[in-house]
Length: 108
Image 1: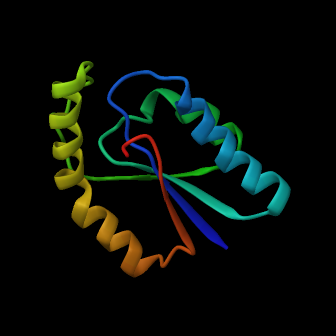
Image 2: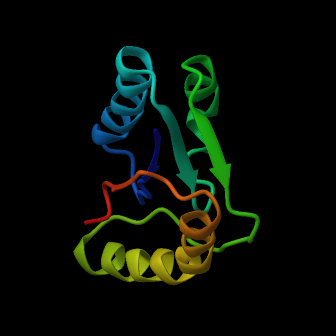
């Protein structure tokens, strides 16, 4: 069973580790094929940890100018940019890879 995590973030929060541990737990205990979608490079600082836990990363090939932001208004604008930047990439994943689940986390 393929499970994909789309979890873009605009600031360092504790739930980043929750996404990694959730994907790792599903892989380790249930032997699911887990992947994390790297929409605009937000997971680049965690690649070493993700690779050590044998979780796949899908990188969006488009370059982006989305910056890490904090604050209510700026983060909402950044999330809208992230959605439009990632829309066709996610659509391609859903059509080609046909994941059993797409878990959207951190952006909701």
